[in-house]
Length: 114
Image (cartoon, rainbow, N blue to C red; front, side, top):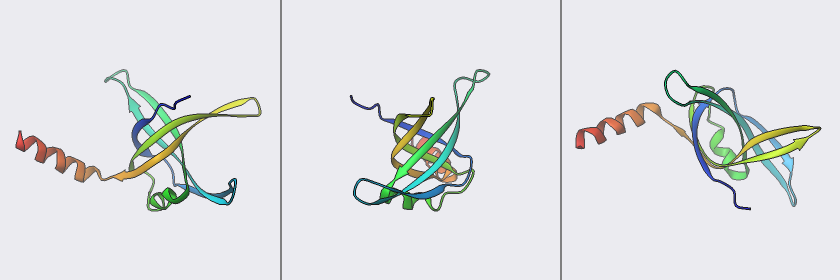
């Protein structure tokens, strides 16, 4: 079954939690964090919280993240069953912090060129 890959942007609602777990062959570093975003039209906005998991070397990128940062993630959703509960986590393949000021400047420059 092919996974649906998604791009998501949101604000980090808490500090990144780092931990080490035992993988198949070795220990693996995991970064866990939650993003918040609003979706939909004005007046009909839906709030969404996305629980994200980053594995391996990519966790190095998350060490600089702070609460409130605007973050871009690319990956897929995975459901996990634990004790009669279903948890939906977003498995991150790529992650980066978006500098809102730089994005605004870039948009302004692009609009000037048109």
